Length: 481
Image (cartoon, rainbow, N blue to C red):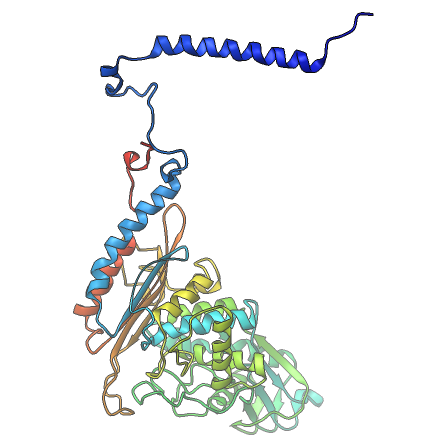
């Protein structure tokens, strides 16, 4: 048998042969394709064969998406300059794209946020309570023979801010009536279905789930009762009598509903604390996601205040404004939201003592998204809620989702001088083709409620700037060179 050659020698020989063939072939090809020196720098239109690109391999121009974003951001920053330059020294603005800060002015300045405070309350409520949390309102008492309740029947509040009756809702006349409400009629029907025919005692409303603070103490007289409160853990129809005990008002309303359904009631409507008794019926609210939608879309002050107390109750066992505010502060810190200068005087933003920064509001928006419970609950420009009549003729219609805020602060008798008026707008713009703008603009000033001032800022400066992103980059801008 013949001895085979060494494999190593064979491989080396083959490599040398291939290398020599490639070298000869390359020299021949170069001689055939080389242009004269005078012609090598001239390209005819459309002639790209053999084009030697000068852009380095690792240049951003070889990543068009990255380059496009860079060009878009630069153009966006330029479009925001009129807004930044024209902002007064008592207001703030901050804008980011997908969490990247693009522009800001006085963003760390503590300002009065008005209803932009509701963004913070809503976000923390979802964090603490969960999107599927529900409120439950119950009726307790002892049924005897023939469906007779010997003694009192108790209407026990579970904190539901949206208990309403059909007739009140139809006649409310509010510019932004509550949505996603809980029908008190359903609870009355359930009591009758349980077999109750007579109540020998009273209908007692129990709001003891929360403390008895019905108004935030820093609210001015111009908003107390008319814009918010009185509120308690048992509240029906936003309390038609603004000076009434919410639990008493609820008990009287429920008594009427039972009488309309044929139940004989020997006593009257009262407020008090329920005694141990059998649960006769209950009614559940919508899930918290829809309660938050009602809060943000209609800017419901009572809903915000009751949510704040529920946050406190869930975390500390105390249903109070102070307990809830502590939870909000702690939660913001856990989210790494800058809290320097923040003052949490209430949950709705009605108080002039509230202070937020645009940096903090932007951070809350960045912690969430336009697709989460808070984002989906916001008013939509030109479509719904407090933005239904805004940006109607703008490219932002249907794309901008944001929380408004307004405080006129006129005739405030709780201070020696009027605080500044407030107009605020903070939220998201969904970018065509993907991505999201997060922004917070909070105007404080004596005349910002005048359409000539805030209208210019919103519709002539902020709106066009937000609508300008992304800019359209040309092929030449994006192509390697």
